[in-house]
Length: 106
Length: 271
Image (cartoon, each protein chain N blue to C red):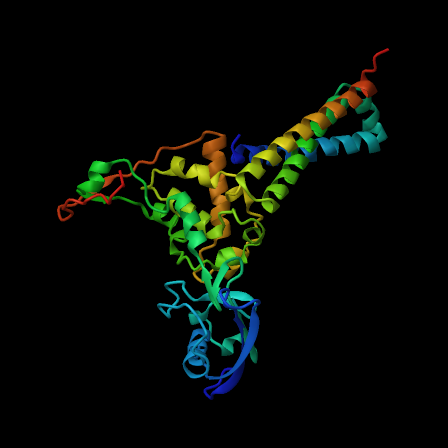
């Protein structure tokens, strides 16, 4: 993937974090709206989207910092792959937590 | 502080010869200056009258060549364009530009910078070779098209923007504001068709996306080029063309001119 695509997704994920994070805050702090949101499918879906955007935004940010301080083309590739694998692992873990929380297997 | 009389100013100058010195040192010189004396004049006076071993680089003396960029009182400035008394300081600290290898004293090595510049092909790229070899006219440009890039074409390649850039300080592979500005200058030129050929360099891990937008490059530019703006516009072009696939083909009208005649020979290896 080209750097422009990675950074474009980075900015989009930042916007998604703002929106989904705002919805999450409202759902947890305003009882009048919160109860409606909590009981609907919208709440876990919002959380899963927030998790995906947060993980991408955070790990891409770390990747950018590491690429800047550890120069070298091989290093850049290695950093990108490490961040990708860490991201996949964290996403699977986070998804499993949400599945257990919202759709527990009896 | 402006006066017609000569007053004595102390110069603290960075001295270092990597071939013989273990570490850099600061050397002080007292120089009499008047209101018209530039830092370059004072340095040349020191060299002529006090210390011929002091090494400086300069050429045009009128802020056109960009050779005499240096750190003057910790800021990137052109020595020929900076009057000593306008600095409002009795001690003038002069050091080589940051973020470059030191050749000797105040002279820095730009070879790595120019090597990197080649990656962005800083020249107009066209595919109509027949017209380039046997020109019959001139390419038409509107005033708006010219205004789109003329500010960025004023760069004199003094390298001071790279010296002020915080990213260039930490990432030696980062292209830097000077080179990215050069890339945008040609990409935004309506006559140029080389966007695809430059994309590999500018859209890499050490290309335009690494800019933190500190804008210190634009602050120190002696020609008012604004490389920080060029980098942001470059990013916009990349998102439009490389991510969203929105591209409007450039069409430049050729105005036939009777007096434009003659066959041009291609340089060796240029095909």
